[in-house]
Image 1 (tube, one colour):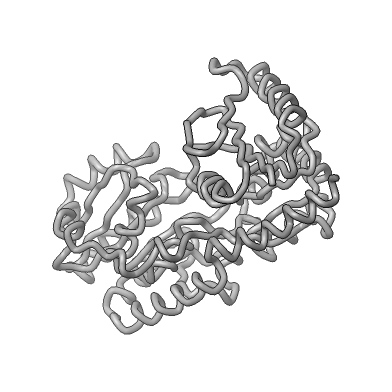
Image 2 (cartoon, rainbow, N blue to C red; image 1 turned 60 degrees about the vertical axis):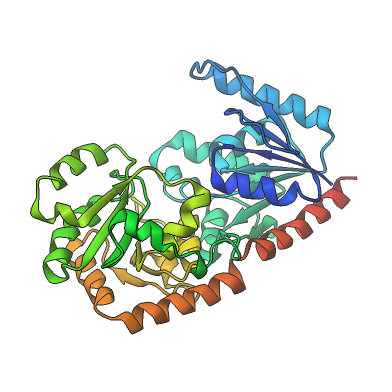
Amino acid sequence: MKICYLGDIESPIVRSWVDHFSRDHEVHVLTDRYQPIDDVRVHQIGWTKRIAGISYVTRVLDVRRYAKELKLDVFHAHYVFGYGTMAALAGAKPLVITAMGSDIGSEPERSFMVRHGVRYTLKRTDVLAVKDVLARQRAIQLGCDPERIVIAHSCCDTDFFHPDATDFALRWKLGTAMCRTVLYTRPFNGYYNAMDLAYAIPFVVREYPEVKFVIVEHGDLIASWKEKAQRQAWGDHVVFVPKIAHDDMPRFLASSDIYVDTFYPKPNVAGHGHGTNLVEAMSCGCAQVLPDRLEYYDSWCKAVHYKQGDYIDLARVIVDLLQSAPKRKLLGRLSRMTAVAEFDQKKVMGDMLKVYERLAGRST
């Protein structure tokens, strides 16, 4: 089968699909950020010099040209407004689009242009892959034909993201070997509500001093907040690390006691699904603390919740987990079992292969 992916090749999500299907199929990638990949034909689209409007048009034209020249069985775009819209405008067929979260969640509420573009794209896709039932309902609300929607959860390689990836050398290096560890991997900015955690940390440290927070250094608030943290007494309980390469993520997750995510959409609409790092944390058996979003009350989610925007409640929930090893371990075991059963890459992508085969048969 000949499959073409359109998306950001620097995204670990896109790369996981490319890597998986390139083992047994001819895979092409159209991307505006060129990176060579072994055994995959990567095609640069658009002008390398970005000029608003004109650059997007050149990418659409390139997508149209490649879609015709390559004679594809399936064309799969990741992200509805942007790459998905490019594919729709280019007339790529048969077209699969993965809704990544905010592209059908909060983004259509921010702008008439985005909402119109999303509706246009959803009406022209042959199959829309969404992450859960709430995202399916949201897509229908935006005008997508229910018959064209499939659920394809965020997924990971559960053999690679495994509790046995624990790395004691890493814990010694980070200075977390003799204490409990809380990991935060989101960009440190307002969009992901990172200050919920920033404000919670002093309260957690006061109640449970044997803890260290491992914070990834990216996001527009990280520099100023890091400088402030280093002046505080609780600053010794925060370890800053460079952005973690995806291949190193299992070591960090499996070596942590708690994974925290602070993202909740504004406006508060459903459809965002669940993040890949969350699924990876589940697969590594790391207990999770998440905001009280609708998506996280589904049966698959084994996390504990805090009230959105309430850093005192976030601190309370973290302290409660830190103080209860049996609860952390139970949540970790249940999360691992769910990840293997529901979110394993071979299962999710195997189900999508059946979709590909159906579309390829229909397109001949």
